[in-house]
Length: 231
Image (cartoon, rainbow, N blue to C red; front, side, top):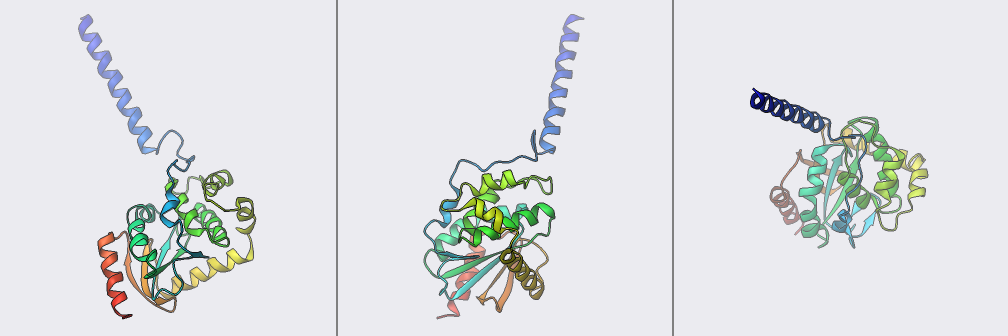
């Protein structure tokens, strides 16, 4: 009898633990509204590559690759982590392709706050560094995690960035105009999902290549085909 009670007690305890773990996982962790950037240097992928506003790479490059991204979009994060590093290494660092990051706020208020701050970092030519840091620390959608404290943690890891100035500029006219231009371009090309990738020669001559995550191989093939047109 005693043995049966011991076994039963053990099973109940195990079941309780499993339920607790399931709840923790489904909620995204003990505190899903608080996130912090990792210790690894995620900005190294763009270090040394010229930046000007939202443009990364040689502005004279013949081919333009544009990404429409929502800072909260998990698929944009997947693209940033798994695809962008090799594309930047092979095509952007070598001067073949220049890229633009166009930020949208499809997913709500946290997206809008993030887009404003990242766009403001672009005024100091650090948009791509800031975006890499944000995607690294990305939290659950619309949990209110994009606070001033969170943004300062993210932006504070960007070398050479004046974070206090970013926090001022994010509410300024330059950021409003820049995000307004994104919406105009979004409407022109019928962008309705993120990430969406467009390829061409300039902002007025683009075609939608893909919406959703794409592999390095597939994107590389598309860029190679575009580069052949410039020869």
